Length: 85
Image 1: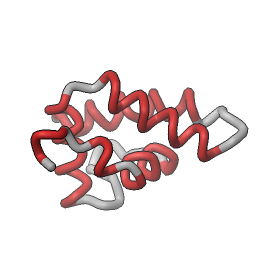
Image 2: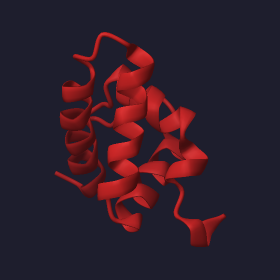
Image 3: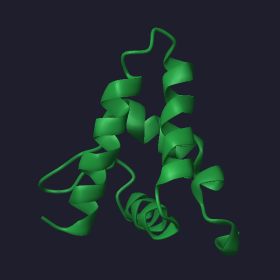
Image 4: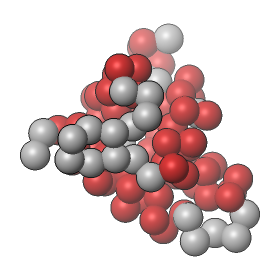
């Protein structure tokens, strides 16, 4: 399994928790907040670079759930580490 596949699986685990929220917007915010607070910058960079080349969030072995993909794409600037702005 490559690094991106691993990151996708981690993000989807977070997403599966927040997907149970009745308010989808609240779930999207929760996912973005969790990734911003708890993922190392290099993890966020790797996932964002992957999405630059694969905007559908899919590899041969893994794919981002729709709520996670929405959370990341809607919060791309916020999830980009400050030194890369």
